[in-house]
Length: 273
Image 1 (cartoon, rainbow, N blue to C red):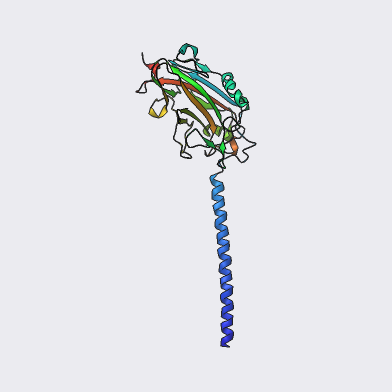
Image 2 (cartoon, helix red, strand yellow):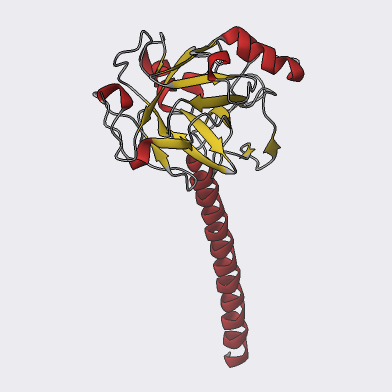
């Protein structure tokens, strides 16, 4: 009887061990599922079909304010040869070396930490003007030393203020919250984030106020009198932004950039007599 009892106890212990192993396996599986759900939830901002869905129908407008000129090519210190407006035709001429144009751009989601180098959702490097992000270069020149800013105040100019807009409605209109524009000067970039929200991917960004308030944080780059400077401008839809989801696929986007100059105290030259 005692031997039989010991055997029965051993069997019961074996059954108990097997049950505990099954419970551990189930717990491990559940934890794996939870981890996957957390990962998926954290990446929902990205489009689900990067190769087929994108932000399209992009319109650009670039203008300059008092004492400031711009062009797609350098004319040295001859400021009279520079322009007040960069047209889409001028940008398209630049993009022709990439065999593309503004009308052909499709802003698939990418992200960046510095506004200069970009990767997709899988961490693969993305190149400019290849259905990823728009990139082009401009030469800026000024008739006096100045800090250059984007401005929401047209002041004495005949041009419209800086804005990022869409004609879309509903959740599709959130596209204006998902885009960024960077301005690279000698390996460092200032990043403009319209409708700025919570920072993503370690980015340092700035937004603009209306009426315009010039400050150190809105400075893009500095110009010395009659010295042209090459600036690289990049426009992208940031996949890490909460608004960069399926709702804004195929939205239209209009980007207007008015550049204005200030002195070292951030007083705009349009206000200085």
